[in-house]
Each structure stands twice: as structure tokens, then as C-alpha cells.
Image (cartoon, rainbow, N blue to C red; front, side):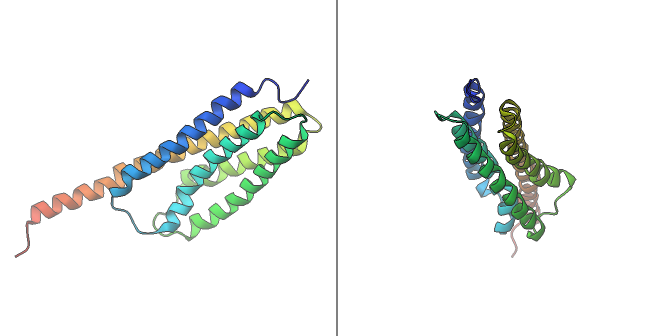
Length: 186
């Protein structure tokens, strides 16, 4: 029996969700583009870009596993490379989080922008390594990593939107109200 059999529906659902959420992120970023924000691209590189990367990783993993492979080796090697690449990318994300100056990351930010994806990519890489000995367990671990990345991305996207609406948008409204209160300067 092929180790990939039975996973088609799971990865169709997970991959479709990731693809839809990537599109939704573009829409949201377009809608909040008018809000005032600090002109620091490093903050976007640290907090917004990784969310798209995680959704893209889930989409890519879904495509890899859903492709009509003749053997189990091809997808295992590719998902192992994806896990390794994501693992290295998370080290870059940490450096970006530390070097940006717009926002001081809190515990929750470290948890969801670094630790959870770092663990997910590590699980993905380790599951590829273990796939030879236990293909069913490796498929379960890869599925768990995909879900962890998907839900981490959802959390981070929601967190970013609420930050922009409730914090940045509030500052814009307060500034507008201050301008009305003070009136035009003669």
C-alpha cells in the first residue's frame, strides 16, 4: 500500500485553506495600506512576510504530497528539504525580529512568530528522516506540522490585523481628533 494513499482529502483541504489565506492576506494588506505606520520595512520582514511564507509552505507541502508519485522517496526528500529550509528561515526571522525597531516583541510574538513555526519545520524535517522506518508516523507528523504552520499563520495574520486596526488606527483617529480640537493655526 502506498504511504500517501488516504491523505488526498487532508491535503486538498489544508492546501486550499493556505492558498485562500495567502490571497486574503494580500487583500487585508491592501486595505490597511492607508493606515499610518512606521516606515520600517524590517518590521514587515519580521512579522508579515513570515506569515505568507508559512502559508506558502503549507501550500507547497500539500502540492508535494498530493502529486501522483510512483514512489514514496520523491515527496519525502522534498518535504525534508522544505522542513530544513523553513528551519533555517526561522533563524533569519529571529534576526529580523531583533533588528527591527518599530515594535518590541512580546512573549506571544516570540511564541507564534518564531517558536511554533520553528518546531513545525523541525517536525517536518525529522518526519522526512523517519519516513523510511515508519511511513505512517511520518505522514502523521508531516500533517501535524502542516496544521501547526497553518494555525500559526492564521494567528499571526489575525494579530497583525487587530494591531493595525486597534493600535495604529486608534492613533490615526486620535490625531484627527486633536487636529479638529486645535483648529487651524493662524
